[in-house]
Length: 322
Image (tube, rainbow, N blue to C red):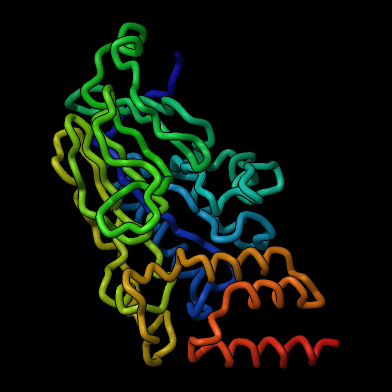
């Protein structure tokens, strides 16, 4: 198996940027520029530290129909660095990676090293020894084991095996687990994207599981107010990821200055089914509003105080466009 070999000190991990030309949720109009600035800061920091920059999925918030100007900006930004980019669920259209998604444009422009297939991705040659970096993009399972000895017979001894993933992993307080945290023979680290809220690192047997969280504040919540956007650094001898605070603007410079709505339990609002449903409707762009009507009828709770407001807004907008 012939893999690219890169000499570096370690990995700089960038979680789920969700970049978009149209601000998601309640983010203000500076959203695109803010995320571009964060990405640029991360790439420069990786270069300064001699680290390989690796995005943990969901580079894009919308998988396609992103503006040409945004794609041009990303091509200019990524060109000098060629970061590794894992494919997340938001990078695919209708759960498939197709040539018409925006990530395919970046790949064709040769400005990223796209990780859209499962398995070993590249070898990181560090001063301490060789590290194999493998990948499980969205839609591909995390391996139950890895044949390390077989790989070493062909490629030489490995100091560590690191696997990056974009999945629902059973970290503490996460409500949608699919993968249990357990020892994976042959893999030393699993580093996960997808889950926006940082989770504590957990070691199970010989495998350490980490979830550094995303770099973008998508939801107007108290949690987002309190949390600093961070990237994470992995080195061969680390016990836990080292967090790096990304330069960022004050919360109320990027969100409206207003009161918070009552929050329910662990309000990872950017991942809520309601907001995801609204985003899917935005992709469809139904002109007559019938898709939105069906969605609201199936999802809003008449007992909730905001339900009447949502329905009144829907009626006003659709009646005004007939």
